[in-house]
Length: 173
Image (cartoon, rainbow, N blue to C red; front, side, top):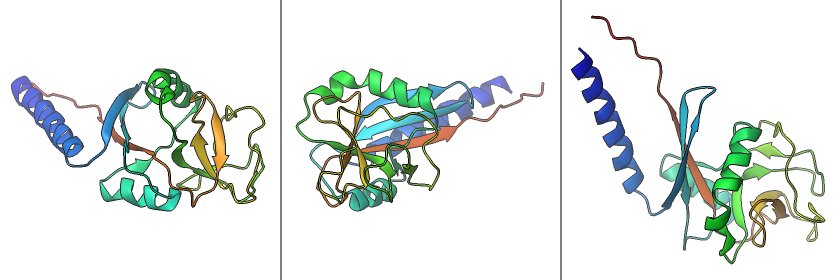
């Protein structure tokens, strides 16, 4: 029975690896959430640039979502883990959050409609609403540890996220 369980887990892992290879994005890391036994995989669009809405559609086309964070711990872990990866990028990077109140520091929501439930680490003088149409959230191109508001029609690279949970499996002998 334990052998069957081991085979099942290996098979599930191989399916996941196959799924990761069926899209044009660059795998940039994994986060294991201890609070809910979930695994998150992060993918960078690389040379694929899109508006915020099109980026959301492209992520969904490949079974993922534009990057969101479940909590402050995942947000902090992502930003610290990938600071060197994003440091040499020459563009802001879209993630899956937006607002209906440009210039607001608190009224930001994830793409599923949930309000961001932690303090957003804004860049200096951000959000600035410099174009009066900066409704979308990005990583700052000069400092990937902080966020920046940007226009949603701008064409930028983006990060997709794939999540799954492994439920507790009980083996009867």
